[in-house]
Length: 285
Ligand SMILES: [Zn+2]
Image 1 (cartoon, rainbow, N blue to C red):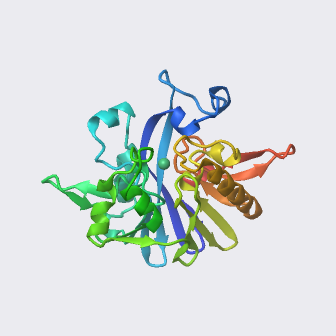
Image 2 (tube, rainbow, N blue to C red):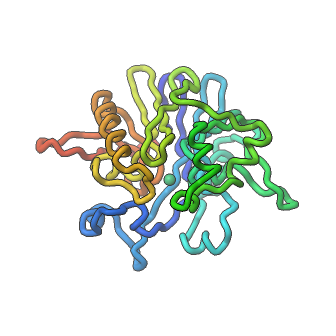
Image 3 (cartoon, rainbow, N blue to C red):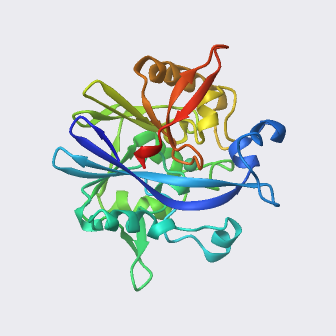
């Protein structure tokens, strides 16, 4: 757990999958990424899905809902999907939180691995909100892009993850930077998607950045040129990362990487050669 100001931040890993390395690494040669990440015999690497539970200011907030439990069996098998310790809902239960207790869910963007747990199946097969008493937030532009995807983006935008919530009035579309509670705000970090968000926490002289897919893995944050094949505006991702690298260095910020299997929490350090690396913070999980 990370405590910042009056807020407690828990990382809950919803899912572990094996992803074809072409996804997270795109144009980066295997000889380079392979120094850090091992692949299996199908050239897949492990990816995690750390959602946040934020408690404080009288609120119970979930940031991103992972892959969820509605993945078709064939796809789940292809990606060797596992939900460690019961995934997001199991992790919440271990902290004494029921789905009814959550009053706000924030989706950093609407790719299927960030909002798959927004909804669940009722016994009759209809869709229900997983968190019945929560308001759900995402950016208005992100919702528009997800609702009407193009040939490139439609592979990861599934209306079942968000449209029922908007139609029932449970989803609020936000515009630009928004304060969630004092010390926690949504910021726009475009590139992975045009209206992608990250989450900033500040308090008591400390800063925490939940990058979401601005940098899916730690190496994407330390290397400006490395980005996933899913980034729809890669050169904008690069400039966004340049700004937030600097922000993190100036504040010695704690950085949380949503998909990182090795060092999900760390801080940037600059070596004598000027090269950035990530120093793990192990006791944050
Ligand atoms: Zn993702």
